[in-house]
Length: 150
Length: 405
Image (cartoon, rainbow over all chains, first blue to last red; front, side):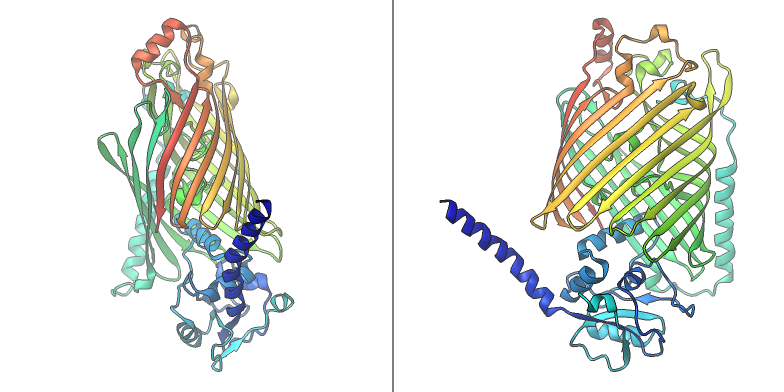
């Protein structure tokens, strides 16, 4: 009886965890900016601050324009866990708090990688994230050293 | 309660500060509007959000916040929030609330203000602005941002510590460092909040046998602020809030005087993917405590498991003291009057989150004290006077849902 229970608990935990692990494995991402943006690297914290609108300007004074993906996107989930160190649900709660206290509104959401790329291409201050396989020839891909170390 | 509510409202010399500032805000808006090209706003400049909830509350005797002994199911509330980014310099924010009170639907203007971007990190706010106090001051009615249906009554109940908004002018700023961050608010104006006073403590013979007198408190010429500090530990922040103003009091003999009204407090919060842990403490002093003082404190913790489920627990404690100059005839107070100064609430909750925007709740509160737990009717108060005893134990069961969009 005890072995059966332990087996079921182990199987259940694997069953619940495996889809999430697979999603993370499939959803690596790249952080992109406009090709004329002189920035080469950013820290994880700096990227997080941009997307949470805690910092609103690049070093040259250009307004930062972050673009998110939809909440259910596995790429967004991977980005949120790695950059914000919080899941998407927690970040949505953060934005609820910002909105209802009248302090800020969340970044716009693009439907997919192509929409993010288009937005960043057309806005000098733009920053976004796309899946690792996305074609990023017309934009600059940033290095995030503390994410590379993970 | 605060002494101001112990009497029928006297002829208060109204401060013009709040009304003047709102007028200035409107003038600013009109000036900006006239300077803008006459074209429709970009649709991305307009954001519409809302939140609301419904609950059924059932107690085993006294009324407590949203529950009574017969079971109350008319606890319905909805708010609509609109913000317009008019241009890169200013934003207009407004929120209206619709609340069911008995058979009436009451509409309140929660806030309406213009925010001017002085710099990237410094903003000016004018109008009716959310009161930046503690953790929940600016998100008072947003149920999806807390683990219980009810706010902690020790700080956010109808006892005179916090108000939903102030009418005036405010500055807010922020600074983000490598590891630490700070955001702050300063404000000046006046504000008014709801206040429930046990009938025997109103000092008004006409209300002596009422279970509760629903009134309001007003703080004039107030100056206040809040500071919030984010730490290097992801999710941990703490802060301090305070404000000081004045309130007009009327003595038993009918004379009016101005008394200082001071509130201060501290808060700490830790949030991550699973845990939300919060704690606050506040103190209020009217006339430097010579008239009235009170302390409120709560600690709450909630844990999310299996993606959608959450369990929560809270300890909430309120304790008040009537000072030597409290305008009351103490000889008239019933023997159980001290129960009206206390409230301890131990609560447990089980929540199911369909999403961050929709939750259904089952909450249970075990309450000791009568600061917020009142007998059902005047006959019960009368019976308590005759017997010299008032039931101070109340259990409240809540089943409800809250949403936001």
